[in-house]
Structures are given as C-alpha cells and as structure tokens.
Length: 614
Image 1: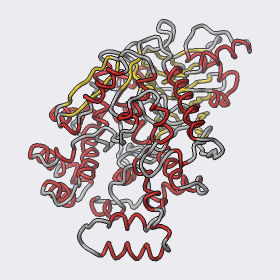
Image 2: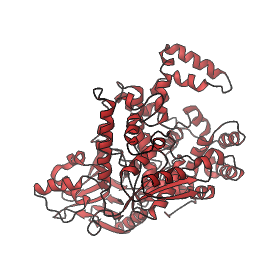
Image 3: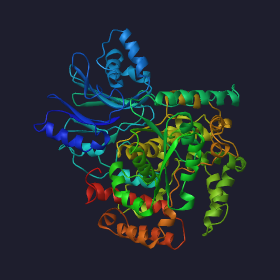
Image 4: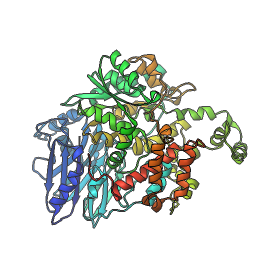
C-alpha cells in the first residue's frame, strides 16, 4: 500500500521534479522511497510496507530489467497466481504481490487484469516497446489521476503530485464545480483541476508515443437468480464473506478493523478474528456510537480503541482534510473517517472497513422508496404529474408534498445517488458564471440505459456503484486513511462477494421493514440482534446543530463573503441559505456545507490554505 507518481518524456531537471512529486505524497508511503529514471520515463514511489517487508520495495523489475512497475494496492490471490506463473517458467526474485503483476503482464498482457482479486492502481513501463500500461481496480478502491501535457503523460496516486510538474498549469474546472453542487462530490472524469482526469474503475490504458488509449476491461452487472431460496443466499453470503475476510487478512503486519454501531463494520469485525477495533464519536449524545462499539467489542472479545471528537477538533481539521482529499467533498462523514483513521494508525498499519455492503446488498434506506411509491405509481403518469404541480403551487411545505413530487417521477428522473444538493435552477441562481453543463439526468442516463430491463431498486444500486461509491465513499476511505499512512481494506468490495451479490433477487435485499435483508440474516449468525437489525445511519455528524451556533455561523459567513466566494458565487444568495438555516426557516445544512467545502478546498489549492500534508 503506497503511492506513486511519474511522467513520460525527457526533462533536464526531471529527477528534481520527480522528487517534488514524490514528496507531495510522503504520507502515503513514509517507510521508503524509490525511483526509476531513463530518458523517456520517470517513475517515483513511496512505500508503506505491508507484504514482504524486506524485499517488496519499488519500482520493481522483471528479470532483464526491461519492464518496471509502480503499484498501489494489494493483490489478495497473488500466491495462487505466483504458483501458476512459476509453472509457466517465470522466475521470481521475492515473495511480493508486486512482482506477480510484472510477470502477469509478461505472460498475459492486459488480459492479466481479470485474473486479479484485490484493490489496485499501477503503472508498468515497458522500455523495449516504449509503452506505459496502467489500470485501476474493478470498483475504484485505489485512485489514479493523469493528464497529458506537451505530448507526455503525467500521473499519480494524488492530484497534488501532478501539480508539481512544470508542464501542467493549474486552473479550476468550472464544469466540475457546477456538477459538484448537485452531487456533493466530483462526478465527472475530468477533475476540479482543468485537464486532470481520473482513470475510472475497471479501466486500463496504454500510452505510446504521445497517444493515450483507454478501455474498460470489466464492469458490474446484475442478474438475479430466482431459483434459490433465501436460506441458500444467506449461506452463500456468509461463506463468501468469510472467504473474503480471510483473503483481506493477508499481511506481514497486524490488521485491525473500524467499528461503528452498524451491521457492515460489525459483521467484518466479528469475522476477522483480530485483536483491535477503532471507533469515533462526537460530543453530542445522539451522534456518539462509542458505547455501541465497545459493547460489541466486549461481546466478540476484541479490544476497542475510541476517540470522542470535539467540535473544535472537527472544525480545525477541515482545511487539512480538504487538502488531503484533492477535490472538494461535501460529505461530513469524511471528517469522522479522518479521525478514526488517525486513531487506528496509532496501533496498526492496516484496518478493515465496511464500505460497499450497501451498494452490493441493497442497504440504503432510499432503496425502499420504490416499494413505498408502488401503489401511487399505478395511477396514470399525467394524473401524478398534475397532483405534483398542484402541490408545488402551494407556497409552503406540508406533509406529503415531497411524496407527491417524487411519486410523479420515474426513478431515472428522481434518483442520482444518495445525495442531491442543488438542482439546475438553484445552482444557476447561486453561481456567478454558470456553464449550464450538465443536467444531472444527462450524466446518469448512459448508466440507466444499461439496466433498463431491471427493477427500480437494482437500477438505484447500479447508479450508486457507478457514481456514489466511486465519487464519495471510496474517495474518502482512501484519502482519509492514507493521510495517516494507514491502509484500509474493504472485504465487501471483493469480486467474489459481488459475484454472489449480483444474483440476489430484490425481494431478498429490500422489503417494507428492512434493507440488506439477506445480508442481515447472514450477520445474525455472528452478531446480537440489535446490531444485525440496526437501521442504516452512516457516520452521524451534528452539522445541522453546529451551523446554528454563532461561532460557526460567523466562520462560514466570513467564507461566504470572501474574495473566492465573490469570484464564483452570488454571495447574497448563498448567505441567504446560511441565514435561513440559522433562523430555523429551513434545514439548509447540507447545501451550506457543499458550498463551504468548495471554498475551503479553493483556499487550500489556490489561496493561502494548507500547502503541505500534515
């Protein structure tokens, strides 16, 4: 688990540039550093030692030194792959999973990718072919950023490395900002830095003599198996989760586990047989899960280490957190992940976490909406639209207004994922120079088209896997853990787990009273009922309360009237959101937070904010 950075093309001071790029991500790999330099490629690496501690340093080579790799991640089936490659005649110099990737590339080329089980982003330089080949894992657990400038490719595990290269000129991407205001995260392939892109999950690339070719090598699909009983699915889930956890435990250092009061992290913690769990809570009673986590840890006989985060600590950490994030993220739970990672990193180098369970097994409360709307949606669409129009004509809120609005729309019209902040009219009103790109339905339509024959719940899962999971959940999991030189492993986000999850019928995922139904039945085998059945909360954070406090209200108002705010926003409009919230006229907490996180990020990277990782 590490970080890498590099570029193609000769630079007179290329070694110094590469060193600066590597130094920007020293938090990803504080244990050691390595470089490969020839007159056509510069590759840098920072290492966090997890497997083959003595011999796993990178960049790493094949036998004749013609092929070199930098790799971030873990390949959980590397021992089986290594055995097969030895039988085919490959000679290994060490016991690392990194060397398995090199020989897999030699043997299979890009076909190697579907043989892998794990999380990864890597770059291979084939010096004889003068070709750069790279890939990102199936679900986007590990990050990969790149740009092409002056005919050369510049890349890295974090954007801040790319900013150190003299060929890239830093500029804000206004289209990214506009769509972020709707989704609460950077939703486009092109990042907030104009011209810098994300390599998307399940994609690989080749770069040869100035030409970049990107292709998708894998994508998730759903195919419900109606022939199996609930009990059969519960058995399969429990078996595959135990298998995944066992694979994710492979390490030459101690592995711990994050633990909230929810079923996902609890299920992982109860099955991994480790010694340590880690929990954070906030200094508000209903936002504190520490007691739940301690009680479960006692029951499963694991030590629990916790931290109660004060309001002052939370707010003080925000600039540093947005710096580490690389792009704005308006999910308040990111800060909780920052502190739980900080707590875990004092004790272990690796921690397991529960990300992915909701997307795979149908865990979000919003997935019950198609069931709630089902009867009403039997009415003719014209009648439903008419009732919604009447409701919207009434100037005040009333019970049922939101229901009528949502019931008047198809799932394709109403659902873009677990967050929907500003609609197109709202963001056009608050932005000083709106671009008009894109209507949120333009972005989701290609994905909805691929699941046009599926039920609404499955469609929602598919959208979340391709949007929310990548842009929010996994972004914060990677960046917040690596900020503290901690590797986070996510056993739910495993190819074999998905192969089971993709076949579960909706009736075993979501019902009128529960979500993740089949998975919860599997969890029941290892957890108390109160945990296995606990309603989905996420990381509860008291943002709504804080924003009414004079201290934090004034802090945000200062930001909302700053020079940066004046550059991008109609400040009267955004201050009104803040004032209305403080006065109790509306709960604008998430919209306020979305704007504020962008302004904090802007100050970090274009103003006088945090300049170095800390």
